[in-house]
Every structure is written in C-alpha cells, then in structure tokens.
Amino acid sequence: MAPVSDVILKRYSCRSYADRPIEDSILRQFSDTVHGPHLGPFGHQPRFELISIASMSREEWKKLGTYGVIKNARLFLAGIFLPAPMAAEDYGYCKEKLILKATELGLGTCWLGGTFAISAFGRAAGVREKETLPSVSPIGYAADRRSLTERIMRRVVGSDHRKPWPELFFNGSLSWPLSPDEAGPYAEVLENVRLAPSASNKQPWRIVCDKTRKTFSFYISRAIGYRQLREVSLQDIDMGIAMCHFGLTANELGLKGSWRKDDAAPQLKPLEYVASWQADG
Figure 1 (cartoon, rainbow, N blue to C red):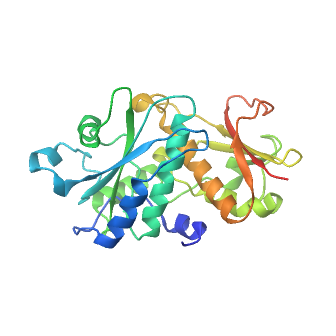
Figure 2 (cartoon, helix red, strand yellow):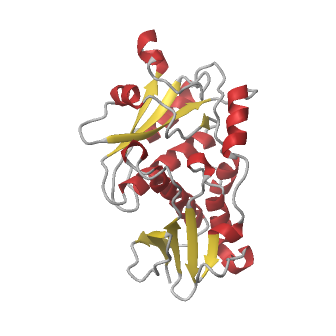
C-alpha cells in the first residue's frame, strides 16, 4: 500500500472522466473493499453500493442526474446510513477511506453532496426505510482534459486552495495558532487534515491541541446553508473526512491513540465540539 500522505496529495475532485471502463482487476479490488465491512470510530456501520451505468437501461441511467457537473462517469459509489448521533461523522470517515482506496488504485473520484438526483440514486442503491443517502461519488479514470464546467466549478468553490494553518489549528486555545514546529510529530497528520475535501471547500474543522492532556479536540465552524441539507449536515460528514485523514496518518506514523467524546473539552463558542483524539502514553 502506498503511503497515505502520498495518496492524499494525489487525490483531487475529478469531474471529467475518460470514456472507458475500469480494468477488471482494478474494479475487483475496489469492489471487494466497497462490499467489505465498514465500522466508524463511534461504532456506526454505513454501507456502500456501486451503481454501474452498464447494468441499467438508457431510461434508468438518464434519471441519475448530476446536473451537468459530472462528465462520462460510468460508475458511482453510493453511501448509505441510518441517522443517529455521530453517524454522519462515521459515514464520512468510512467513505473517505474508500475514496483514498480508489485514488491509490489510480481512479478519479469526487464527493457529490448536493448535485445529484437523490431519489433516482436511492432507488438504484436500494435505500431502505429510515436510511439516508447524502452523497454519491463518480469513480473512473480521469479525462486527459477537464471540461469547461469543471474548470469553472473549481474556480467557484476554490478547489485548489486550502486555509492556512493559523486558521485551522490551535495550541491550547483559539487565541494561539499552532505552528508545524509546535505540532512536532503530528505536523504531517495535521497537514493531511488541511488537505481534506469538504463541501464547497469550506473546511469547517478547527482543532485545538492540549499538550498536557495529549488531546487533539475537533470543533466545527458551521456555515449557513449546510445544517440540514439532505436530512443530515454535510459539514458533519466533512468532520468525519477530516478525522479519517487524521486517524489514518497518525496510525501509519505509529502515533497511537483513539477517538472519544471528551467531557473535559472546553466549550469554544461559536464553535461546536465534535470529538477528540486521545494520544496513548
């Protein structure tokens, strides 16, 4: 397996796909991972389905609208879960692991949370009563040239830009930004969080390091318009994506720890506390 930092650097939101099928061996590897068990750090088990255009009639796949945002995609990854406390975060965590697996296999991907026909994708994915399908992702080989729509969208949402460290990471309180030098062995971990994808590239996560307690507490800075889109907050899913980048990188670097709800985490209004990484030792 490739180093997770290399995979994260390679991943980008791909909206234009080559008009050719995925190689059988690559598709088998990805499909096996998709249909394997998935468990988030807070115990929820989202499920995932692959929706192939090839297995559908022309009338059926025409209903799978992505509103002109995606070009030539033949395969979609649909993620489904039962809404519950921390379920959206677990969903984001598990799905981002699949996104990074696809990237490692040389495939392009893109998180779609608001620009797809939810009812048609829900039928194709077999969504059950009380379940929700908040996002889908096209999977395939990236086209040699991006479409005009993709180029415009990347400029509009600022896909190629990320907030700097002082806006995201803090040392003890929001008054003191955390520098890479102060982060020490966690510098690479936090940089990979900074590079994580998020709805409209809002990057809602804020992380406060408490060196005395050896914790990294995750807070959400909510943006207007994202609270209850498609029954769940896309920004709660974003938090799970950030936690995935943090956990995978920490584990690969041998920085042992675990996720938990920390009753002692300070309240930092207007931010909302989400969860903490508790380092071992």
